Length: 421
Image 1 (cartoon, helix red, strand yellow):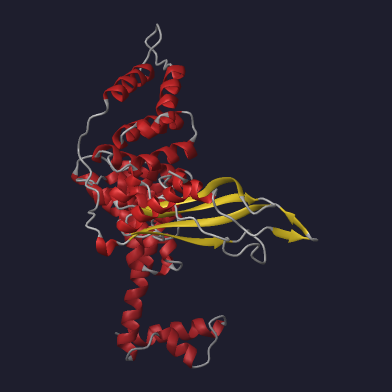
Image 2 (cartoon, rainbow, N blue to C red):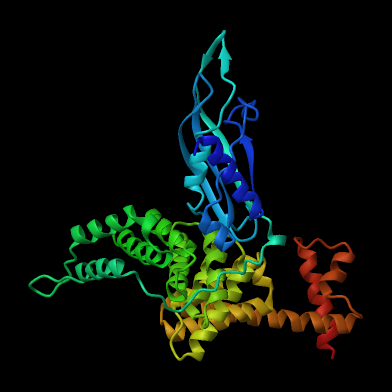
């Protein structure tokens, strides 16, 4: 079968499955586009797994355009997958379309760029491949993750050796994992990914995430968890565990928006939401300045912890106090917020006895009393004067608040309306 027949056959398969692969040219980072549309476009073959699972997405490929207009050294610099659309803002990173995109990119043909009458090569050209399914003609349902699956026999034997090596101990009974064996087996599995089932890959990525995390390599740990989550046959247990772990790592890496997205996704998939997850959500909201949601999340975390019979963590209360303060720049004048703060600090002083918490309780109670007394005085004054405070009246008569006569006015008004009564 010649190349033309292969191309036509691939195109026929794509069209009969209601699949359309659109390509948009990307220009390099320059004021003007170096190239317009290629001389001819290549339609990439839609990956079977993506087609079966109803997955769409896009890739951006970078490459060099040679002096004869062919493509050299293509590699994927951006990749996303989604069940909704290629441009889904909540799409997840994935490598599902990498191979098809690279295969198509190498076949692109451009008109050579001419400089001073000579054709030249241009590096850093970009091209976007979008993979779209016609959802109106497909009955694809959302993935339903199973609670349990079985590994392929060969994978199960290899993973058993990985776990055994990770749990190895020295002569004194101290942990002494044999990382040479662990890495050797995991690399062997990764190199043979094309022959592994989806569930097998998810188990492998979980092990890689653990290894990277233990080594302090958080970016690669996050990447491994992301790949695990994208496997269509991952079990519910592995998936939700990876979602929460990835959320925690994003929080650690100060990727707060992504952390919030992952925690909310985790909450939508688990049977029971924990106090710890709400505390993570509260921390992330606090970091992006959404103090109202931070406070609400922390209050929920405290409530769940109390219902389950264990002591809420100290920093949960600290974030609650910080959120209240950040929401009210004039908090010293807000009686309800001062009372709320005092209650939280009283709880902190009881559960985590520290002088600064006790001092804050005393200070806040003094402010509360002062505000209450001031409120009572204002009420008395307004009743006595028909709705205006003594301060309002003295100011209306032209006395400056910074002058001596102002205090005299206030004293006279007080004597006039209260001492005689």
